[in-house]
Length: 229
Image (cartoon, rainbow, N blue to C red; front, side, top):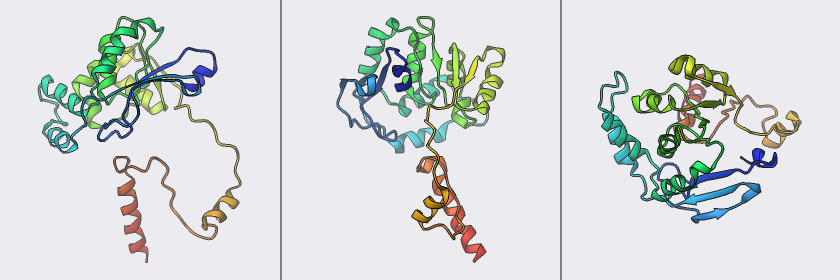
């Protein structure tokens, strides 16, 4: 968003007041701000997510044959959240005034509302962050991505997955995720600073989050250490 704003585009970000994606509890103040040239519109979340209820409900879904009714998937999406009536209202009031709408990530409820409201009204270019996981193959989500005009993909593998699901209707551009390149660093100096210059180590690269496999990776490394010792 900031890169587009730096190129002279009028960029707006519509989001919630949440910071934690597990609970969706309101953290930031609602309203409008303009950090780094991007106009950010924050809307309050209606209610926090009950992760226990969501997990119990998710266990009822058929992630093998996907034989459950559509109403079950809709309920799953509502429990997934975040739900924000203020966000919905802002989109209805202002969404049609934009040249393009870019929903970011397929997994959460706001992207679904954006696409259902804006499909056929303005071009929809989605940064889906799609990957081959059970929720991606829900009928609700497969129908949703079929209404997207164009996809921005983080990797060639993501573009390939979308092409498999949508066939010739998938129009994808691999653009990455917008992370700036780091300046060249002195690897030896960095290892010395970390106390690892003469040590064998495993590097786990990614977000420190249990859902991203970090806990499992640490445990597997501990088992490896015990076995090796």
